Length: 169
Image 1 (cartoon, rainbow, N blue to C red):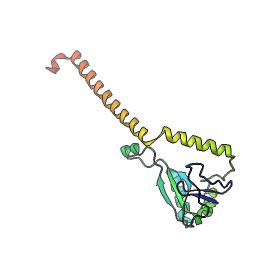
Image 2: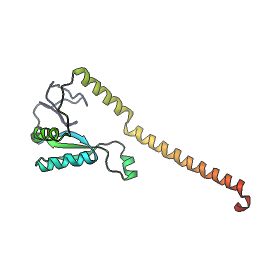
Image 3: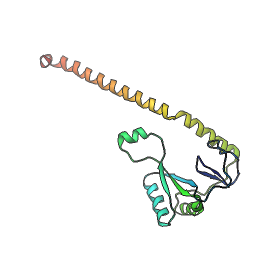
Image 4: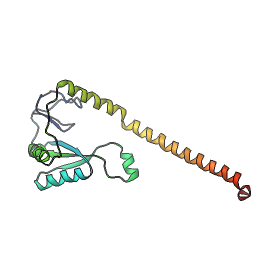
């Protein structure tokens, strides 16, 4: 078993030396309390997973996926996705529990080509949705919205003057 301390993932089947997701060297003997990401969920599914883990006495923590935080803050929306993390010593028990309640699928062996394709897609997606690019896009959209509101108000003013010129004197 190999463990990535950055991604908090376990690799058991192919035993790579480097994490396919982040490129960091994998640890071959992690501590029993090392955090392991087990599932990503949101809404009712997240509540169901947390309740099942709590009822089984499995310690866990949740953290929000760091995408579109600005939109969540502006809308005061609940987090779209949360990652559920369990200690390594409880990992197998948690996997069996979540497969049992249908919150996880049983893992299937992926070929090296499939793993490479997944890693390439993830890297491409991370480049496309970098925090700087996302923030820049949000600022541009806000400026465009302000300009659109200004044009709408100016147009309404011009139309109002055409309809009733004495009202604006």
